[in-house]
Image (cartoon, rainbow, N blue to C red; front, side):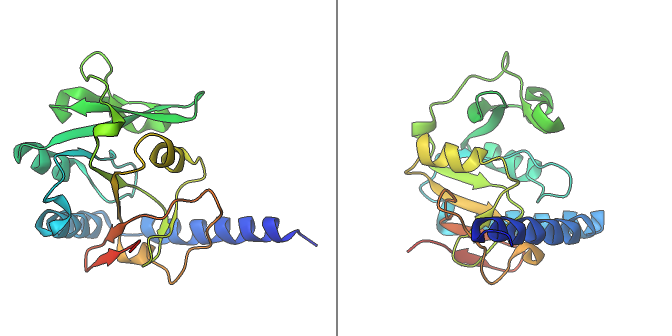
Length: 200
């Protein structure tokens, strides 16, 4: 019989697979429409009112699209950073983005990343708000990532005071994510239909 920890890991892996399969099955047009609604909800929310420096992820595969949102934030005069993944060091490094069309290139795992020669490293301590990707979320800010722990480590070590916001399609939200001690809850989750509050 599997140990409880093994059982929990199996549950998490099965949940991740099920939700990601549902997300992958979303037609491209529906994903684009829902991503636009999520961006509109975030931009209209009070979450950005005091956030001058924002770290956003560059969407990969079927994730909530972020390039239009990044463009809107830059147009609004916000400082925007995106992460570069250092696989060997198992960490994220934020770089300031100015022109997404020329400042990004495929990096770790094929994800769009900042070109180091064009984008200066940004002090993570100055980041006010972090937009966080993930596979599964819950209304209390619980989050399952993709298994690498990059964001959990980055948020805990490099910018623990930043407001954290998950971007998710409604189909990625479940009643409760089975969390482990190292999993960091998010402050908020924004979907195409609602804004969910995380930590009080």
